[in-house]
Length: 118
Image 1 (tube, rainbow, N blue to C red):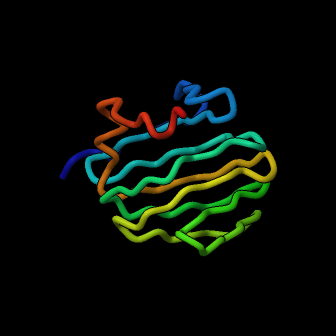
Image 2 (image 1 turned 90 degrees about the vertical axis):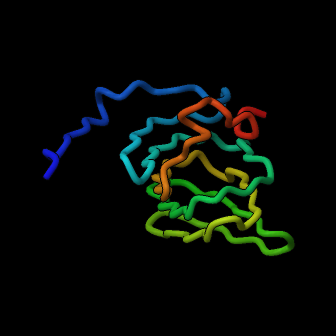
């Protein structure tokens, strides 16, 4: 058995993805956990990934788009996005969101996440 690992969010550097999008990330062997700080007006371009995604809104409001379908989330709401489903997002109010991905986001590890930086 491998020893458990403790991650302290306070010690993880805050990465500026764009001036409206900040994140702290933990990558484990099988998943990625991201704590996002998003400002109103931030947008995530249409994309898809092989990773299953769970987005949990702590505060604020965010809208996800799946083709013509619009899903707005607020505090205490969680969205499950199956793998390979095209989606985009717009931040309605400044928000804090925790995202879980499995398997882990290899594109984030390699820096191949340009769609987030638009």
